[in-house]
Image 1: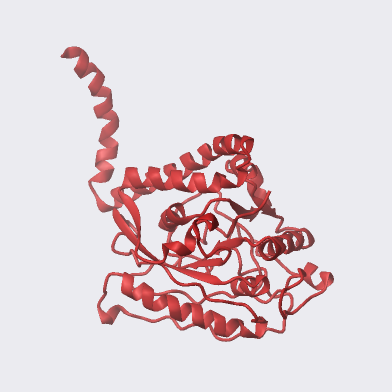
Image 2: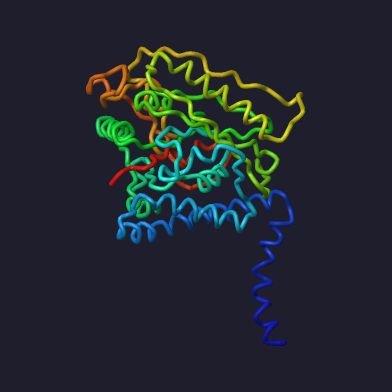
Length: 362
């Protein structure tokens, strides 16, 4: 008995700070946030080994799928989180399973917890589009091993070439992207969305791929500042919205159509709130489509790549689409913002998941 007590005593002392943190809502929030970040770090570290192993068997582009599923399993098990798909899961299945790929997946974005949705739904054969500096970050080995596409935001010519290549891959090799049209996180007690940025809609039109909206319920009741609970997160995948035959002039109408499809689903999925709390956010106003250099800032979130709203890519389109010279494209500017070096998880941080390129071929 004395030997057992000698073993348990250090464990008890080590557990005291953890139990103290768990005794208050704020302490529980920071404890669970730390565990969540640990799950992300564990999955990313494991990704380097996945990359080495899967590359040997010719499945390099299944790495991100494996990492996403690993993160979902670890975070779900340790924190009691899960994602319940309440309709439309067939639209996010891998193409060999009969899904509607390729397409542009667009999801509402509330917080870092949205990574659970990616972990649950990300298809196989994925490749992440990220800024070049991340090549030398702790995530670098995993990202390089999984075939990430790196964008040099400090050099507009090289960045534009990378983006042109991405659009060419989307168009000619029939791949998909996953992105957040709001462009940043928005965690609110009321089920609502920020105005949509237009870069992703330009990509969808330029590639001729349909848009598949993915709606995650408002989970304010489970997660917000100083509160991090557990339980299921409900998600609905809506039917594809075609973009065939559309041009840049149709972007405002397409934005409105996608938003009008997502908002009712968001309200239906979410916990009801008192009417006195509702403060609807006005949809974006139609913008001029005349500027060629207006795209790179809206397509990819924060630390991946920024794309001005109205830029036009050089790749040949299957249907009518605006064109631009390399000189005009090279003059495009890029957002200088990046991922927080500290990795601190806050509600006001710009998006850190970025845009995901699905099915990038070998």
